[in-house]
Image (cartoon, rainbow, N blue to C red; front, side, top):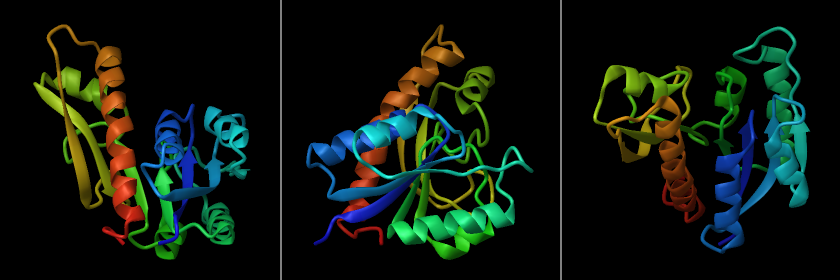
Length: 195
């Protein structure tokens, strides 16, 4: 079986991307990153990719802050198709995905979110969890659809909210769970269990 070709889209430092790459390099996932794309020039994830010889691209959007215009997203689709990507992995990508991308890769776009969806969709889910006073939160890997964190759930990992937790301490523990869960899910795609 050939390694699954993945494209990773992100907007930040790339800690989830790093955990995925570490699992690939350790032989735990039979996958090959074919491109890393960011909407933030100079994002840490791009440096991480470049250091490992993974091709990179930057998507520049001047019109909108939370999504891509149809023209820009259509260009992104072409870039991803040209890379040969079979699975699109959102790792800290801070824009809502729209139709050009959803139509081009149906059930081939996944995201990780720092809560047990459907609880606390949207931004700063760890802060929402602390403010709500819940005892348990966690992270969710889900298929991406046209809503915000509303796609079909693939897998979840629970994280307890400890007495005295701040949004920052809780976020750090959720990220540790994300770094375990996301590679596990991508491995399921790599063995064609979820394709």
